[in-house]
Length: 202
Length: 323
Image 1 (tube, rainbow over the protein chains, first blue to last red):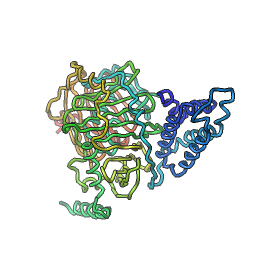
Image 2: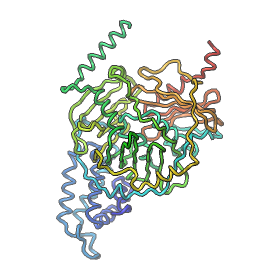
Image 3: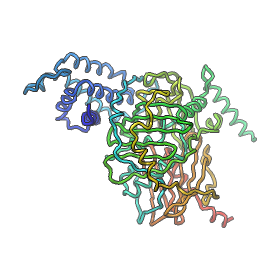
Image 4: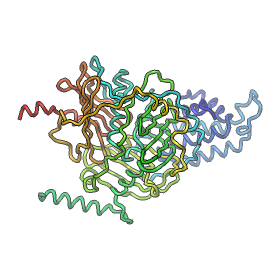
C-alpha cells in the first residue's frame, strides 16, 4: 500500500471526501488489496476505540470483512470491465456505511462515557511507520527575541496558525521549551510534544 | 501545625487510606511508577491522539541509551510531522514546509518529572485520586486511575496504566465536567530492547548534529526580576531561569502542583506585544503587556489558571520600592 492510499483512507474516515465519490474511493482501496483493507479497518477501529464504541461496531467490522472475503473479485480483482463497480457493491455499501457512521459520530469524540471502556489490540503495520522518510530538518537552538512590531490580538479559541507567522513561531518555541523544562510525567501521554506533532494546518 | 492543618492532614490520610487498592498500591504509587516508566523504559508503538475535534495517529519509539533518553515521534495522519529528541537536540521535521518551525535545543539533564519529590499527601490536597479497577488497552492489562481536581485551577485525568510495565496505555485529560480535553491511547505497544533503533534512517538527526551554527542559549543564575506574591492552592515554583535573547533577557518561571504544569515567560516587549488567549491542541497561552514587558503564560491547564498567573505577576523592583 502506498502513501496515496493511506491518505485516501484517512480522508475517507475524516469525512474529507465528497459523498458522491465514496464508492469510487472505497473501490480503489479494495482494488489495492488486503493491506488497504487492514489499514481501513485499523483506522476505523481507532476512531471506535476513542469513542468507546467497539462493543457496538465490532460486529459491523466483522461483517464488512466477512462480506469482502465472500467477494472474490475484491481480493483477486478481474480485468477491468464496464461493470466492475457493481460486483463489490455489497461490500462497498457496508464499508461506506461504516465510514459514514464514523463521520456522523465524530462530534461524540468530545463526550465522556462510561469508565468501563473496551479496547481491542490493533495489529501493527511496520510498513506504515517505516514508510515515512524525513525530508527536511529544522533545529533552531535559541529563543529569539520579541520581533513583534505591532499588536497581535489572539482571539479566544484561535489556533496558533490563526496568528501571524512570527507569533506562531514564538508560541511554538515557548510550548516546546515549556515541555522540555517542565519535565514529563506520562499524564498527558507517554512523551511530551505530542500536541505539536499531531498539530496540523487546516 | 494549626488545628486546621491537622484536620486537613487527617482528612488527606483517611482519603488516601480509603482509596488504597487491595494489593496495597495507592493511586500516587501508580503515578510514581508510571512517571519512572515513561522515562526509563525502551518502548515503541502506535497511538492515537484526540484533541478537540481532531483525531490523529502517531508512531513513537523511545529508548534510553547509556542513561540518555532518545525518542522519535511521527505523525501518521495529516501533514507528516516528526520530532526527534536526543541528548543533543530537539529536531522537528516538516516535509514540504518552506518556513521553519523553530525548536529549542533540549537541555541535557532535563529528564525529570514534576511528580518527583511530590508526596501522595501533597497531591491529595489538589486532587481526589482513586483506583477504579482493571481495564484493557492495546491488548494489555491495565489499571484505571481516576484523578479529579478539587477546584477549577487544574484539569482531571483518567489513566489506564499497564500493570506490567506501568506505561500509560491511555491518558485522558478531563475538564470540569469530565469531558476529554485531550487523550492519547496506544493501539499497539512493544517494550524492551527489541524495539527499532532510534537512529534508523535518521538523516534528520545527523543534519541537526552537523549544524555547528547552533549555540546553546546563554543562561545565567540570577535572582528573579519578577515575582508572585501568592500562588494558587497546591502550586509551587519548580524552576526559574534567566537567559539572554536578541529581544532582551528572557525570564522563565515553571510552576506545578505535581501534575499540572505551566510556564510564565517575561521579556521586554517590542511594540504592543501579544494580548489575549490562544490554544494549540491541549496547550493554551495567555499574553499581556506589563510595564513594557510581554508576559506569556503557557500550559495544559484551564485558561483561568493561566490568566491568574498573568494578572498577578509583578516586577520585584517596583514591589521593593513600595515597601
